[in-house]
Length: 278
Image (tube, helix red, strand yellow):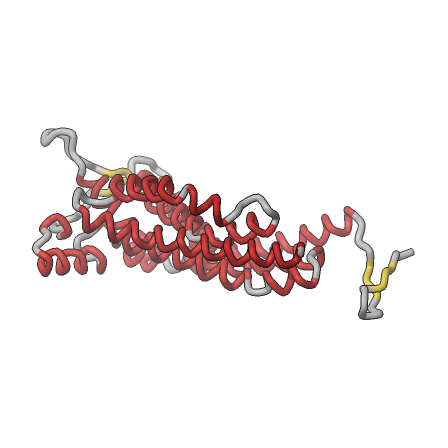
């Protein structure tokens, strides 16, 4: 017999799910998420030229929109270090199946990025029944905000951090007698890892929200350690950008803004927690 319980204050009856019911429910959420990823991956696979020539390989040339914009900005500000001229990396494939496997890999990565909002929605649908009414109210827009932040991080990384990283690492020489011939897998791994890393970093406000909600993190702790975080951000920006202050500022300011925004989120949730306890 199915166990039923009244939902408090509504008179409605809900089924009490067993562990295996939850497991079966999770399985269907995962299946639907995988189907969405596969569909988008197939779309990316059949649009190979757009994915590679227009998107993935574009930051490796001086004609890329960011490289041209930085060059114009460098001329205007008389900062020659900003201008990326004659950038044309020699990307080679050294494995028989390298290009095909790379095509498959990038298609799956593209499928995940494009399906990310739907995957988050499926996760939300699985977790939502276990939440209280006030928790659902406060986190109702979490899927949309998380998706926007992730895509903003992807775009920020692709249009700013990736070109600077590719230019610095791709043209760096320990000696004039050593030439750079970048393997396809090395280039792809660099672009994907940098892009995904920044996309996840942009999820910081969401992580701060939940950690503050459960009492693990406080705004005072974030404020106290603000200077250490700033130093870490400056070091990271100095590593991936050309050796000039302006390029570092272009990268580090948005990251600082993200951290400050996260402090505001933590402060707001912390006050609500205190109100609920009082």
